[in-house]
Amino acid sequence: MPGFNTIPGSSSGGGQPNMSFVGSIHMTTYNRSWAQAGTSGNYGIYSANQEAGYAYFVGSSVTTGVPLNRMSNVNHSFTRIDIIAPTNDMITLYKVKVKSTTSFANPFSLFSSFHYGTQSSASFVLPSAALPLVNVMIVGGGGGGGRHGGGGGAGGSIVKLTALTAVGTTSIQIGGGTPYQSNSNGGTSYFGSLYALGGGYGGNHGEAGGSNGNGGGGGGHSGSPNGGTGTVQTAATGLGFAATPELFGGFNGAAASGQSGGGGAGAGGSASANASTHNRHGGPGHTSDIGGSSVLYSVGGGGGHHGQSPGGHGGTNWPGTYAHGGHGGSGDSGGYSSGTTNAPGSNGATGIVHVRYYIA
View: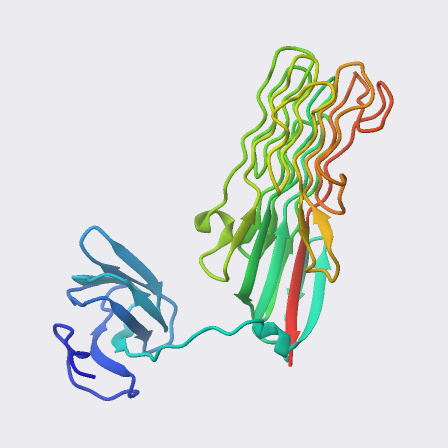
Protein backbone atom coordinates (compact mmCIF):
# COMPACT_ATOMS: atom_id res chain seq x y z
CA MET A 1 0.00 0.00 0.00
CA PRO A 2 1.88 3.11 -1.19
CA GLY A 3 2.65 5.60 1.51
CA PHE A 4 1.54 3.26 4.28
CA ASN A 5 4.93 2.87 5.94
CA THR A 6 5.80 6.55 5.89
CA ILE A 7 5.78 6.93 9.67
CA PRO A 8 8.96 8.82 10.68
CA GLY A 9 11.58 6.62 12.25
CA SER A 10 10.11 3.34 11.00
CA SER A 11 12.36 0.31 10.84
CA SER A 12 12.16 -2.71 8.63
CA GLY A 13 11.21 -6.03 10.17
CA GLY A 14 8.89 -9.01 10.17
CA GLY A 15 5.50 -9.57 11.72
CA GLN A 16 1.99 -10.11 10.47
CA PRO A 17 1.37 -8.85 6.91
CA ASN A 18 -1.09 -6.19 8.12
CA MET A 19 1.20 -4.91 10.92
CA SER A 20 4.12 -2.67 10.02
CA PHE A 21 6.89 -2.86 12.63
CA VAL A 22 7.90 0.59 13.91
CA GLY A 23 10.29 -0.12 16.75
CA SER A 24 10.84 -1.44 20.28
CA ILE A 25 12.05 0.02 23.56
CA HIS A 26 13.37 -1.44 26.81
CA MET A 27 11.63 -0.36 30.03
CA THR A 28 14.72 0.47 32.12
CA THR A 29 12.27 2.09 34.55
CA TYR A 30 8.51 1.71 34.79
CA ASN A 31 7.97 5.19 33.28
CA ARG A 32 9.59 5.85 29.91
CA SER A 33 9.03 8.61 27.34
CA TRP A 34 9.69 7.48 23.75
CA ALA A 35 10.48 10.21 21.19
CA GLN A 36 8.57 8.42 18.43
CA ALA A 37 6.47 10.59 16.10
CA GLY A 38 3.66 9.39 13.87
CA THR A 39 0.53 10.24 11.93
CA SER A 40 -3.04 9.33 12.83
CA GLY A 41 -4.11 5.73 12.30
CA ASN A 42 -4.46 2.32 13.94
CA TYR A 43 -1.61 1.25 16.21
CA GLY A 44 -0.81 -1.90 18.13
CA ILE A 45 1.50 -1.53 21.13
CA TYR A 46 2.50 -4.75 22.88
CA SER A 47 4.39 -6.00 25.89
CA ALA A 48 6.87 -8.79 25.14
CA ASN A 49 6.00 -10.32 28.53
CA GLN A 50 2.27 -9.74 28.00
CA GLU A 51 2.20 -7.55 31.09
CA ALA A 52 -0.45 -4.93 31.80
CA GLY A 53 0.48 -1.31 31.14
CA TYR A 54 -0.58 1.91 29.48
CA ALA A 55 0.68 4.11 26.64
CA TYR A 56 -0.10 7.77 25.92
CA PHE A 57 0.23 9.06 22.34
CA VAL A 58 1.06 12.73 22.93
CA GLY A 59 0.32 15.29 20.21
CA SER A 60 -0.09 19.03 20.08
CA SER A 61 -2.69 19.86 22.78
CA VAL A 62 -4.21 16.36 22.51
CA THR A 63 -3.32 12.99 24.06
CA THR A 64 -4.78 9.52 23.53
CA GLY A 65 -4.25 6.88 26.22
CA VAL A 66 -4.50 3.18 25.35
CA PRO A 67 -3.88 -0.06 27.25
CA LEU A 68 -1.03 -2.29 26.11
CA ASN A 69 -1.55 -5.50 24.14
CA ARG A 70 -4.30 -4.38 21.81
CA MET A 71 -4.92 -2.35 18.68
CA SER A 72 -6.26 1.18 19.14
CA ASN A 73 -7.16 4.06 16.87
CA VAL A 74 -5.16 7.25 17.41
CA ASN A 75 -7.03 9.99 15.53
CA HIS A 76 -4.29 12.63 15.65
CA SER A 77 -0.60 12.97 14.93
CA PHE A 78 1.81 12.61 17.82
CA THR A 79 5.39 13.50 18.69
CA ARG A 80 6.10 11.05 21.53
CA ILE A 81 4.68 8.08 23.42
CA ASP A 82 4.71 8.02 27.24
CA ILE A 83 4.59 4.47 28.59
CA ILE A 84 3.90 3.03 32.04
CA ALA A 85 4.74 -0.68 32.26
CA PRO A 86 6.79 -3.11 34.41
CA THR A 87 10.55 -2.55 34.54
CA ASN A 88 12.64 -4.71 32.16
CA ASP A 89 9.74 -5.36 29.80
CA MET A 90 10.15 -4.72 26.06
CA ILE A 91 7.45 -2.65 24.35
CA THR A 92 6.92 -2.92 20.59
CA LEU A 93 4.92 -0.57 18.37
CA TYR A 94 3.25 -1.51 15.08
CA LYS A 95 1.17 0.51 12.64
CA VAL A 96 -1.81 -1.58 11.62
CA LYS A 97 -3.56 -1.75 8.24
CA VAL A 98 -7.18 -2.93 8.33
CA LYS A 99 -9.85 -3.49 5.68
CA SER A 100 -13.16 -1.61 5.68
CA THR A 101 -16.21 -3.47 7.04
CA THR A 102 -19.87 -2.76 7.79
CA SER A 103 -22.02 -3.77 10.76
CA PHE A 104 -24.89 -6.20 10.38
CA ALA A 105 -28.24 -6.05 12.16
CA ASN A 106 -29.34 -8.21 15.13
CA PRO A 107 -26.06 -10.06 15.73
CA PHE A 108 -27.27 -11.69 18.96
CA SER A 109 -30.20 -13.33 17.12
CA LEU A 110 -27.71 -15.96 15.96
CA PHE A 111 -27.35 -17.24 19.55
CA SER A 112 -29.59 -18.65 22.27
CA SER A 113 -30.27 -15.97 24.88
CA PHE A 114 -30.22 -16.44 28.67
CA HIS A 115 -31.08 -14.06 31.50
CA TYR A 116 -29.56 -13.44 34.93
CA GLY A 117 -31.01 -10.84 37.29
CA THR A 118 -30.49 -10.06 40.96
CA GLN A 119 -31.63 -7.60 43.62
CA SER A 120 -28.98 -8.86 46.04
CA SER A 121 -25.21 -8.42 45.93
CA ALA A 122 -23.76 -11.42 44.14
CA SER A 123 -21.18 -12.65 41.63
CA PHE A 124 -22.10 -13.24 38.01
CA VAL A 125 -20.21 -16.18 36.51
CA LEU A 126 -20.23 -16.25 32.70
CA PRO A 127 -20.66 -19.85 31.48
CA SER A 128 -17.59 -21.16 29.69
CA ALA A 129 -19.61 -21.87 26.53
CA ALA A 130 -21.04 -18.35 26.34
CA LEU A 131 -20.06 -15.58 23.98
CA PRO A 132 -17.68 -13.21 25.87
CA LEU A 133 -20.09 -10.31 25.22
CA VAL A 134 -23.11 -9.54 27.41
CA ASN A 135 -25.87 -6.93 27.57
CA VAL A 136 -26.18 -5.33 31.01
CA MET A 137 -28.69 -3.03 32.69
CA ILE A 138 -27.73 -1.50 36.06
CA VAL A 139 -30.42 0.24 38.12
CA GLY A 140 -29.73 2.31 41.24
CA GLY A 141 -31.98 2.26 44.32
CA GLY A 142 -34.90 4.67 44.72
CA GLY A 143 -34.86 7.59 47.15
CA GLY A 144 -37.46 7.64 49.96
CA GLY A 145 -40.27 10.17 50.20
CA GLY A 146 -40.25 13.13 52.57
CA ARG A 147 -42.53 13.81 55.55
CA HIS A 148 -45.10 16.47 56.38
CA GLY A 149 -45.93 17.67 52.90
CA GLY A 150 -42.60 16.51 51.57
CA GLY A 151 -41.82 15.72 47.96
CA GLY A 152 -41.52 12.21 46.58
CA GLY A 153 -38.16 10.53 46.24
CA ALA A 154 -36.68 9.88 42.82
CA GLY A 155 -36.23 6.61 41.01
CA GLY A 156 -32.64 5.44 40.51
CA SER A 157 -30.68 6.09 37.32
CA ILE A 158 -30.32 3.33 34.73
CA VAL A 159 -27.11 2.48 32.87
CA LYS A 160 -27.39 0.13 29.88
CA LEU A 161 -24.43 -1.42 28.05
CA THR A 162 -24.64 -3.43 24.84
CA ALA A 163 -22.00 -6.04 23.91
CA LEU A 164 -19.93 -5.48 27.04
CA THR A 165 -16.82 -7.67 27.21
CA ALA A 166 -17.19 -10.07 30.14
CA VAL A 167 -15.17 -13.14 31.10
CA GLY A 168 -15.01 -15.21 34.27
CA THR A 169 -16.63 -13.72 37.37
CA THR A 170 -17.97 -10.18 37.81
CA SER A 171 -18.92 -8.72 41.19
CA ILE A 172 -22.41 -7.22 41.55
CA GLN A 173 -23.52 -4.80 44.27
CA ILE A 174 -27.11 -3.63 44.58
CA GLY A 175 -28.10 -0.16 45.76
CA GLY A 176 -30.79 -0.21 48.42
CA GLY A 177 -33.89 1.95 48.41
CA THR A 178 -33.98 4.38 51.31
CA PRO A 179 -36.72 4.76 53.95
CA TYR A 180 -39.42 7.39 53.98
CA GLN A 181 -38.30 10.68 55.66
CA SER A 182 -34.71 9.42 56.10
CA ASN A 183 -33.06 12.26 54.13
CA SER A 184 -30.78 9.72 52.42
CA ASN A 185 -30.36 9.00 48.71
CA GLY A 186 -30.92 5.65 47.08
CA GLY A 187 -27.84 3.42 46.89
CA THR A 188 -25.52 2.97 43.90
CA SER A 189 -25.66 -0.36 42.03
CA TYR A 190 -22.51 -1.87 40.46
CA PHE A 191 -21.61 -4.42 37.79
CA GLY A 192 -17.86 -4.70 38.23
CA SER A 193 -16.54 -1.14 38.11
CA LEU A 194 -19.55 0.19 36.17
CA TYR A 195 -22.38 1.73 38.16
CA ALA A 196 -25.74 3.52 38.21
CA LEU A 197 -26.49 6.17 40.83
CA GLY A 198 -29.50 5.96 43.12
CA GLY A 199 -32.37 8.43 43.33
CA GLY A 200 -32.45 11.55 45.49
CA TYR A 201 -34.61 11.63 48.62
CA GLY A 202 -37.79 13.67 48.89
CA GLY A 203 -37.41 16.78 51.03
CA ASN A 204 -39.03 16.86 54.45
CA HIS A 205 -41.09 19.81 55.77
CA GLY A 206 -39.67 22.93 54.08
CA GLU A 207 -36.45 21.23 52.89
CA ALA A 208 -34.93 20.82 49.43
CA GLY A 209 -34.93 17.44 47.73
CA GLY A 210 -31.81 15.29 47.53
CA SER A 211 -29.47 15.49 44.53
CA ASN A 212 -28.17 12.25 43.01
CA GLY A 213 -28.76 10.21 39.84
CA ASN A 214 -32.24 11.74 39.67
CA GLY A 215 -33.36 14.60 41.93
CA GLY A 216 -35.89 14.24 44.73
CA GLY A 217 -38.81 16.64 45.08
CA GLY A 218 -38.76 19.67 47.36
CA GLY A 219 -40.63 19.45 50.68
CA GLY A 220 -43.90 21.36 51.02
CA HIS A 221 -45.79 23.22 53.79
CA SER A 222 -43.28 26.06 54.17
CA GLY A 223 -41.87 28.12 51.29
CA SER A 224 -40.90 26.63 47.93
CA PRO A 225 -37.76 24.52 48.44
CA ASN A 226 -36.06 23.35 45.26
CA GLY A 227 -36.07 19.86 43.94
CA GLY A 228 -32.78 17.99 43.88
CA THR A 229 -30.45 18.08 40.88
CA GLY A 230 -29.93 15.00 38.72
CA THR A 231 -26.43 13.86 37.76
CA VAL A 232 -25.72 13.08 34.11
CA GLN A 233 -23.29 10.17 34.27
CA THR A 234 -20.45 10.00 31.75
CA ALA A 235 -17.78 7.52 30.70
CA ALA A 236 -15.73 8.67 33.69
CA THR A 237 -18.67 8.33 36.10
CA GLY A 238 -20.05 4.86 35.65
CA LEU A 239 -20.89 4.39 31.98
CA GLY A 240 -17.48 3.13 30.86
CA PHE A 241 -15.78 3.81 27.52
CA ALA A 242 -17.01 0.77 25.57
CA ALA A 243 -20.12 -1.32 24.98
CA THR A 244 -22.37 1.44 23.59
CA PRO A 245 -23.27 2.92 26.99
CA GLU A 246 -26.64 4.64 27.53
CA LEU A 247 -27.89 6.63 30.53
CA PHE A 248 -31.54 6.93 31.51
CA GLY A 249 -31.64 9.52 34.26
CA GLY A 250 -29.92 12.72 35.30
CA PHE A 251 -33.23 14.61 35.68
CA ASN A 252 -34.20 17.20 38.29
CA GLY A 253 -36.89 16.91 40.95
CA ALA A 254 -39.68 19.50 41.08
CA ALA A 255 -39.70 22.37 43.55
CA ALA A 256 -42.39 22.60 46.20
CA SER A 257 -45.22 25.11 45.89
CA GLY A 258 -46.57 26.30 49.21
CA GLN A 259 -48.01 23.33 51.06
CA SER A 260 -47.56 20.95 48.11
CA GLY A 261 -44.33 19.00 47.85
CA GLY A 262 -42.73 18.52 44.43
CA GLY A 263 -42.47 15.11 42.77
CA GLY A 264 -39.19 13.26 42.32
CA ALA A 265 -37.63 12.71 38.89
CA GLY A 266 -37.67 9.31 37.20
CA ALA A 267 -35.27 7.63 34.78
CA GLY A 268 -37.49 8.73 31.90
CA GLY A 269 -37.83 12.43 32.73
CA SER A 270 -38.20 15.24 35.24
CA ALA A 271 -41.06 15.57 37.67
CA SER A 272 -43.89 17.99 36.98
CA ALA A 273 -42.70 21.57 37.28
CA ASN A 274 -46.07 22.55 38.79
CA ALA A 275 -46.38 21.28 42.35
CA SER A 276 -49.99 22.39 42.83
CA THR A 277 -52.50 20.34 44.84
CA HIS A 278 -53.60 18.36 41.80
CA ASN A 279 -50.36 18.24 39.82
CA ARG A 280 -47.39 17.07 41.87
CA HIS A 281 -46.62 13.84 40.10
CA GLY A 282 -43.26 12.11 39.89
CA GLY A 283 -41.26 11.76 36.68
CA PRO A 284 -41.80 8.83 34.29
CA GLY A 285 -39.72 5.67 34.33
CA HIS A 286 -38.00 3.61 31.64
CA THR A 287 -39.39 0.42 30.10
CA SER A 288 -37.05 -2.47 29.25
CA ASP A 289 -37.51 -6.11 28.21
CA ILE A 290 -33.98 -7.28 29.14
CA GLY A 291 -35.52 -9.63 31.73
CA GLY A 292 -37.76 -11.31 29.13
CA SER A 293 -40.87 -9.11 29.30
CA SER A 294 -41.49 -5.37 29.25
CA VAL A 295 -41.13 -3.92 32.76
CA LEU A 296 -41.15 -0.36 34.06
CA TYR A 297 -38.16 0.82 36.10
CA SER A 298 -37.24 3.89 38.17
CA VAL A 299 -40.44 5.91 38.34
CA GLY A 300 -40.28 9.06 40.49
CA GLY A 301 -42.46 9.32 43.59
CA GLY A 302 -45.20 11.92 43.88
CA GLY A 303 -45.18 14.86 46.30
CA GLY A 304 -47.44 15.05 49.32
CA HIS A 305 -49.71 17.98 50.25
CA HIS A 306 -49.79 19.10 53.87
CA GLY A 307 -52.80 17.68 55.70
CA GLN A 308 -54.61 16.70 52.53
CA SER A 309 -55.50 13.44 50.76
CA PRO A 310 -54.52 12.03 48.36
CA GLY A 311 -50.86 12.78 47.86
CA GLY A 312 -49.35 13.25 44.41
CA HIS A 313 -49.19 10.35 42.03
CA GLY A 314 -45.95 8.81 40.88
CA GLY A 315 -44.96 8.82 37.26
CA THR A 316 -46.83 6.64 34.79
CA ASN A 317 -47.85 3.34 36.44
CA TRP A 318 -46.06 4.06 39.71
CA PRO A 319 -44.69 2.17 41.54
CA GLY A 320 -43.39 0.30 38.52
CA THR A 321 -41.67 -2.96 39.30
CA TYR A 322 -38.20 -1.89 40.36
CA ALA A 323 -36.30 1.08 41.85
CA HIS A 324 -39.20 3.52 42.08
CA GLY A 325 -38.99 6.56 44.35
CA GLY A 326 -41.05 6.87 47.52
CA HIS A 327 -44.08 9.18 47.74
CA GLY A 328 -44.02 12.24 49.96
CA GLY A 329 -46.11 12.63 53.11
CA SER A 330 -49.21 14.74 53.75
CA GLY A 331 -48.75 15.16 57.50
CA ASP A 332 -46.57 14.14 60.43
CA SER A 333 -47.38 10.51 59.72
CA GLY A 334 -47.03 10.84 55.97
CA GLY A 335 -49.40 10.24 53.12
CA TYR A 336 -49.16 9.19 49.47
CA SER A 337 -51.04 8.47 46.27
CA SER A 338 -54.60 7.24 46.92
CA GLY A 339 -53.90 7.30 50.65
CA THR A 340 -55.83 9.13 53.35
CA THR A 341 -54.81 12.20 55.28
CA ASN A 342 -51.84 11.38 57.53
CA ALA A 343 -51.49 7.86 56.07
CA PRO A 344 -47.94 6.43 55.87
CA GLY A 345 -45.57 7.68 53.21
CA SER A 346 -43.48 5.22 51.21
CA ASN A 347 -39.90 4.04 50.87
CA GLY A 348 -37.69 3.98 47.81
CA ALA A 349 -37.36 0.57 46.15
CA THR A 350 -34.23 -1.57 45.85
CA GLY A 351 -32.15 -1.41 42.64
CA ILE A 352 -31.45 -4.33 40.34
CA VAL A 353 -28.86 -5.61 37.85
CA HIS A 354 -29.82 -7.58 34.73
CA VAL A 355 -27.39 -9.53 32.51
CA ARG A 356 -28.30 -11.19 29.22
CA TYR A 357 -25.74 -13.63 27.84
CA TYR A 358 -25.56 -15.74 24.69
CA ILE A 359 -24.61 -19.32 23.85
CA ALA A 360 -24.40 -20.75 20.33
